[in-house]
Length: 248
Length: 148
Image 1 (cartoon, rainbow over the protein chains, first blue to last red):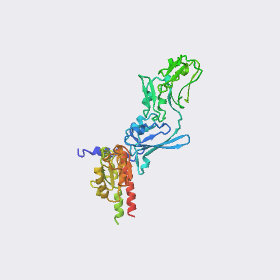
Image 2 (tube, each protein chain N blue to C red):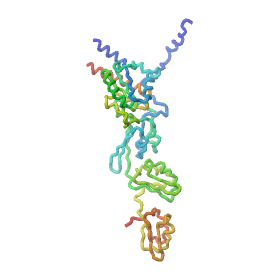
Image 3 (cartoon, chains in turn purple, red):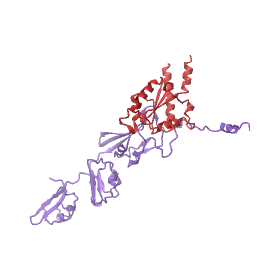
Image 4 (tube, one colour):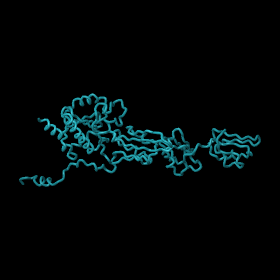
């Protein structure tokens, strides 16, 4: 044959170019491509986990006090992000999503910042657990972004560090028995009144042995340090002499 | 007399100088991928130049290490006006995960005005192409303003 490449040359004349079309703003990455971050501020509970896990410190948080709560503004800086998707993985409410949108080109760097404002209602009470129905599964402890909750399955104890708690409510949503809630200040302790007949039932029912009753000397004593304010003595008192309330 | 002709031709062929200021090589291979036939940046006249003195667009990748800082400043000085600076990836704009390191002296905005920033770690070649195309348009405007 005289022109061995003639057929190839002719077919190539009617072919589409092999290069990718440009510009192609509609094009997205593959379904699980990690691109521009989208943030749903309504879903955010302001637990602070995303900021904690972000290695390049791309997420910032600003708060502004308004009536009845706080406005929390979160900004995700695309020019600082490594797109590791840790924020997406750790977000308990799935408010953060990495979209397959890779068109992150801007003359003004402000265009590359995703911003969302969450309104957080003021929570007055403190986190409390209904110990009687708690199964000590530890889900609350694992869901807590601040590690404020400690659950020990062997000793059956549930404790919370109120200084660490950010009141995000993540534990309340995760609790399978729905025993967690934000309660008004917990009762300070057991209050004793004169109608007591010194039957010693309260001392027998006390799970920690904090109450000491002497029938002969007619004395009733409680060790406030060991008392866990469970209310067992109050519910079992036949004369209703005990109550939970503020101490003098 | 020939100025208009030269300007018109130069707009069709902006030359790039790629400067690596401590990049992990992720962005660099994507820039090279841009020049392959699949993405074909050369259809817009882009060409990698060997010297910053020949370049119109400075493509910077990497978080500006202390070692590369002086070379960066020298390269910026050597690039003739009008020039356009494109930052590729998160590193030049913020330092990325190296932020706060003793070996980093960024961001790039400290040394030169960044005309186009392409975000991503690393950006896709398509995104880099978009950034370069934007830079070429800015360069055209800059040249027009300069020769008025």
